Amino acid sequence: MYQDEQLICEDCGKEFTFTTGEQEFYAEKGLVNKPKRCPDCRKSRRIKQRAKRKMFDVTCSDCGCQTQVPFKPISGKEVYCKECYAKHQPQE
Image (cartoon, rainbow, N blue to C red; front, side):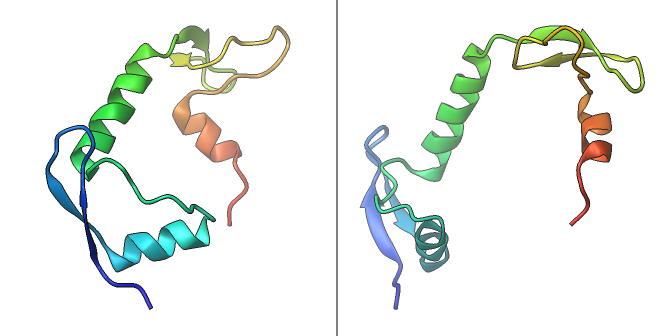
């Protein structure tokens, strides 16, 4: 049903392949627009967006280590480091 498709990145102008696997993933997620950027430019853009995020220093409620989170902690609510957060998530 899907075929690899050649697209042009709007940021760098290079040609990239929109693979059948990516097209199936987009369809599963209900995404209707094709990607406008090549994988390298998408990755670079994500990194830049993360760098802009304000981070807050907190102490993990479980292990007591110092860590940072991308949201302002609410007084009285538990906050976990990455490792402890993973332990508190339901196992699939």
